[in-house]
Length: 292
Figure 1 (cartoon, one colour):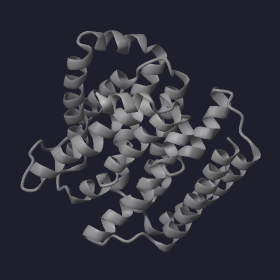
Figure 2 (figure 1 turned 180 degrees about the vertical axis):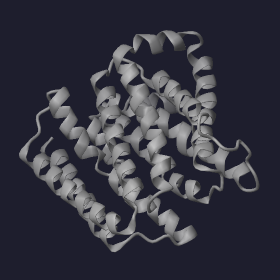
Figure 3 (figure 1 turned 45 degrees about the horizontal axis):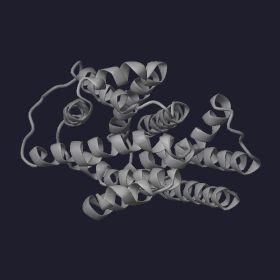
Figure 4 (figure 1 turned 90 degrees about the vertical axis):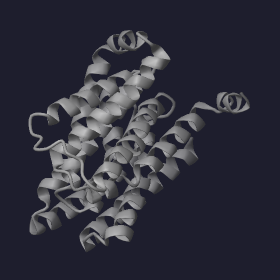
């Protein structure tokens, strides 16, 4: 009771920041789990769709009962957009991780805050100041620099999908921001069902063997189900770009997990480009918070 009361005493800024931070902390080992799993790509996509769907859907039914369907229908066009972007990002993230270095995928995702700022300026009429414009330019130059290295290594397919994931995250966050009065968690749940259903057309085997029996369910619940609920709620309290800023933590911590356990090292170009992106966005965020 006391804990619930203390949460109610938090400001919107504190609530949104706490939700986003906890979500990203759960997500950080996700890339490592994907690397450690032995199941084929579409089998992994299937389980990452269907297990979180069943877990969260049952939870939603307990909380909202049949109102779950009413809430989803009332989300309207915002819900439909979120279902589509959420489904795409869930698929492209896994395929990207399996076709390039983990660090490359996560650096691409780190561009999501800048993409959110661009989309917010266009669709939500939230003005883009000079500092944001400069940050966007530096970020995209860094991404091009990383892409140039991937062309040489043949990782460009994975990098492109990582960037598509960032675009999807940005669109999703802006969609939530523009529908603050609507609950889009049911739309995210339906998105997970779409992911699992789509994977059925390509899956080679449903069999989970050896360590996959532990890794896959653990990843699907801790790194997928729990965070996607929190990330869907967070933009109702703070700006979309600010939510995506927390994904910088994954960009830093995710590759560290992978390096510690399986010794996968990012290229020099990825390290340089990633450091420039992280520092740029960190400085930009600090200046924005200072001004506000």
